[in-house]
Length: 314
Image 1 (cartoon, rainbow, N blue to C red):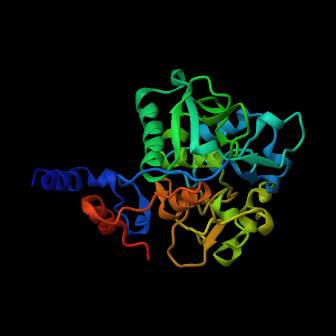
Image 2 (tube, one colour; image 1 turned 90 degrees about the horizontal axis):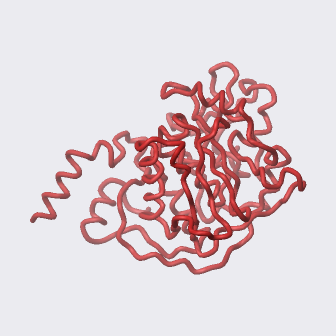
Image 3 (cartoon, rainbow, N blue to C red; image 1 turned 90 degrees about the vertical axis):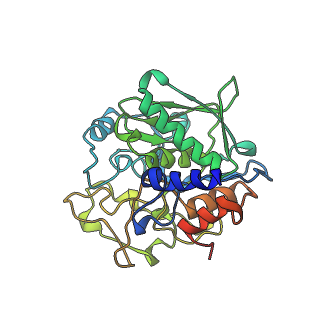
């Protein structure tokens, strides 16, 4: 009975923050899971050749200046305001060595990390940890504190915007989350970490034209390359269909030159670019990429809450 009242209290008094309220966000997952973690697989190759030479360079203060102007009322997400490949993908490690077309997944799903705490206040550090906690709850990935491992990520706050490399590049690799814009929403942090985990943007999928219209006449001059599609032979959907609700999807106004939409969903009233939490599709893709055997809870009180808010798998 005590557990029942505790559950009711959580739903009634903190539900507005712990669960999505808008029906359009019904696929965003923020509920806890109690199942075991198990990764069965090795560190496979990630092909990043579709990014082109724009992905290889050095951080830019100009991108940081753009992100510094971002506010909650901005039409686009802060990571869509950078001058990097697709806005927020940067692989500075290979800038002097030409294009390296492949990176790898994190071995056994273990990602050593460090946070440059001097760059963030307590609330911002807590937001980063909430994003990491979501991966721990919903996937088999494990972010572990850096303790001398060869390969690791360092989360920093420099005036260069929101950006990350894709996959495990080897050695120290940075994920830049410029405060306050890049740490204002948990979804922005989840987005950049998903790049580091090994994922590209959702609207870069080869079949995206079946699901959205790209309005090239509204795109800023020079930003057209950000809307390139990946090669079918070089990418995998990991068994998940196109996901409008993915935290990896651009917003409808990404790289707009005139405050008009650059991406229009072919399904009426569908919203794009949410940054509240991982979608069900995001979770499934991560777990499939890393051969994770974790399943959505379907029994017990956790399963009942899950199914009540997110519905069944079908």
